[in-house]
Length: 570
Image 1 (cartoon, rainbow, N blue to C red):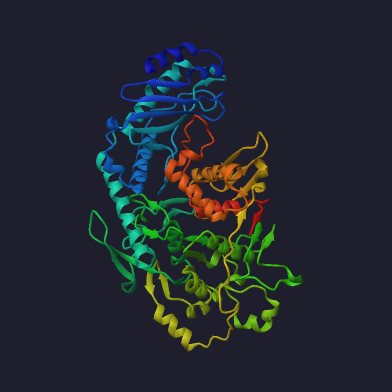
Image 2: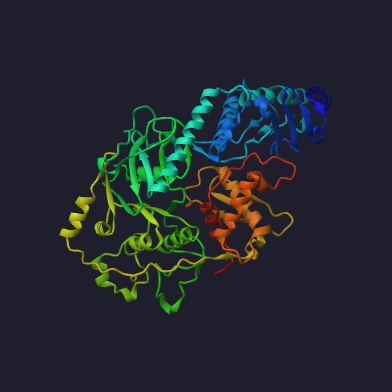
């Protein structure tokens, strides 16, 4: 194995040569207490950066077994080291000049959520930090001396800082927080709760395009109504008190700008753990919760919409319904049925992003347009059936329809960002004011149909040059096709979208057989990742996949369901 000193001399000899000569440095180099793996060398200063790994023996990194003794602790520890690497990179004195990506050092830096990702890998005997590096050039001429300082000076300093010199107490706090978050999740599952919001939580965000908390004293800390307050035992401290939302049908009501959607947004993101200082550390939601919204214009492929839509003109079948251009109500019905197909236990909806005629059809409209002429059964007539027959709860933000009072288990009123339990008041109003609307849609919810994806759905990837990838968070690229995920609101990181692209590639090449249901395919992928790690889906033979983060099966299914050209068997 070559040494870092030999790498330095090699780079100095390459100074002034054409950029492609950088290919000679691929390999492994021994440093002081670590190895530098140069896995991939970019062929051009404007191309994707080179991929490298700094690998430390675990004993040298001083990461004891207790730090990775459970899956959530391992994820938290890897997340912490990735954050330390990002912090060290931000502290660089400057970036060398040059063309293209010259001088770049980057790590797949985490955001407010703690996700399983590939930026750092803690194995039984080693700790790997995966970085992207732009090798310096003037035009397309190698700047060898600058490259030597980058790879033999800056990269080792950053790696050493991130993996060995980090503040031990800060990592231990990170791990204790993960332990408490996991304890809350287990408590919710074991005691029939859909979600928990701790007292003192800060829910408002800095701005509409920022996921950071509203700064210093500008937000009102959350305080549970007494009737909904519970105490959850957690390790490393006293029980946490806050609002527990039991399973069933929960309405969040109130005037505009009083915090209804802010609370729902926090619950929506509560499927993920959050870092210390985020304000939502102890906002924990059933991790199968799916946010459903209207998505006019999306494609729908052979989804059983019969629980919500039936009796279409000209006898069109809704038990296996397809369209290239769904209406708002049709798309929302499809979103619910697709989430049920994948096994959700909790639906989250906001009146503001829903189709009005999907949520409610009032008595006056029922009188004017007879049920025989209206194929849509509104959600108000299905929510209770869904819970009683399938155990699927609903949390719904409402500002304009009291018809839901009669089917709700609880009603939370947001008043200047303060929650109040007004269930009894809402029920009294429901009893006092005659409800003239007639229930629609029958006495049972209806069937949830499983679908199997046919391999020809992925014909767009059959060409030799067909590639998969992502454009930001909201677009997956498959060959010359793009999948629009703008309405999939629980995607939080572009690295998740890259992972979805690779999952789709894997489905097309190995897993989709036309017989296995989509939910079972997602389970196969989850088992593969549990056994082999997220690296297992990487398309880069011999290279580290340092920019992937784990999405949930629900977001994977959302991408599959929005693939135009999808073919399924029901």
